[in-house]
Length: 160
Image (tube, rainbow, N blue to C red):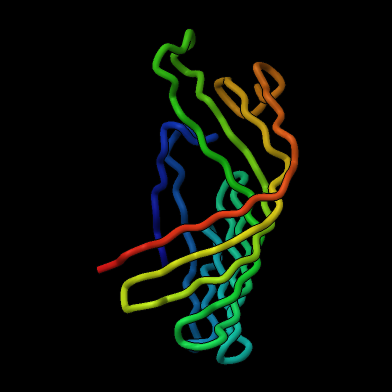
């Protein structure tokens, strides 16, 4: 069993949210967290991994990864994510600056050395918008819609 308490003053639900989930892992090829948060990982064959997760209220992640060899992986995925910030000079102390988007991504991860990851990806981002307000239902006020379009990204990580 997994018991949690999630709190972020900038999230859509700006109060502590309790979570209860059951962790089920019958083998190294299947792992599920059933409840809140929800997460599932399934490896139907040695080189293919399927993942999906959901967190309140509008955070969804799905990804398929195929390992070509020990140092190269190909992946494709869908993400529905959001961010929120408190602006320094906001007129209303409860207002936040919100950003929402959905994206389809495909890419390649290369591991040239132990603890080093390089990631080159491309995709399409859509349903992007910004707004200022106290909650999601304020999304029609002070809203800026950003057009859909392709993107290219390159990133890297060094881990110890």
